Length: 497
Image (cartoon, rainbow, N blue to C red; front, side, top):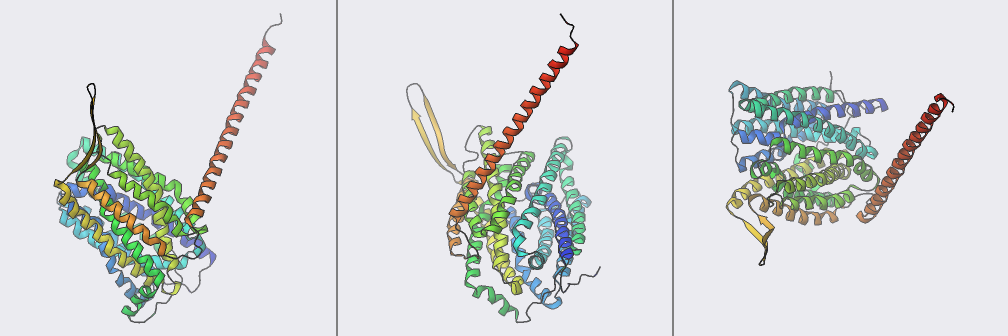
């Protein structure tokens, strides 16, 4: 089919486009579920990856974002964002299938092979991502950006939860019964991901694109435009500092649970599901509030919660009782899911909102490239720091001695991973201070939004209690009526005395 832009989109075109983008999102989520997260880390460790290589794997998506400059050049030449997005997304899924086939063919593989082909996967994904963002900005009405993307995220994360459960059970079964085929299972995951990803590219090709024209000015001149915009420049500074701080710690959470705590992969998947369910339950709320008030206020509310979650990781593993550590992990993943739902949605939306419509692709490209540099530096530095702190520990204890009772309590116990998490949390706290300099149209103070949210939550809780009581009273009433009816029937059939 011809992938040509349209001069104007009808209401039917927009509805069809919104539907196709959701189907593409579901296919993309299958790809991510099968080849990313804990599964990718587990496969990399099976192939013998060290901390620096794990950091490099986490940095690859950000490193390849630098190549989004190619997207600008392609859009300027062909003025067709849909064709660029669809073709590059299809090319991005092929390396995944190649990885799987190579592992099957040679009954194994190397970490260098995995990194090599994943580079091309992320390279084409990055080139497609920029034109996709610009395309979506023009196709989706601005007033429903938050609501639409929160709905899309709910669908994709729900699918991720279901897939994660199935895949975790399958891997546990294979690991316990057929451990020699564990790597082969990961290879099959990659092949399926490549095939499903190509189907997703087909769905995306059916979404319409409104015609747009990118300036023919010199590329260097175009790239300087966002940097001259003071407010957008402030957003770049905050976003770059934020992703740098987070990526020092977050890529190593799974490594810490697998190697540091020795948790089974199924435990980690369950914890991930808890985080995703928490995210799904709050996405609609974050979407409504970001549309009604401001993305900046949502970040100011949810980011401190996530920083506290990173700090809490420093206390995981210092207790000898596993149930306490697991309980803490559950709480961390619950609040991480709630907070990251608001952060990720708002960071995406505020970038789209502050980018002028006519030059959106240039602004988004500069934003992605600049933040990509700092995003890539984060996990690389994290890998180096993890190796540095491997032989270093810091313990703060509280000791009680008496004739009848002696006890030592661990207040703080820092080692290889905990140092990493505290450093990331401290830098994230510093980055959050930069958010106040960013200005957003329709901005509402976070205190006002907090008050409204509390009122809404109390109202919803009150409604739930009232509805719950009504249901209880209704059930009780039906039980009483049923009992009376039974007594009446019994009385009517009994013999007279």
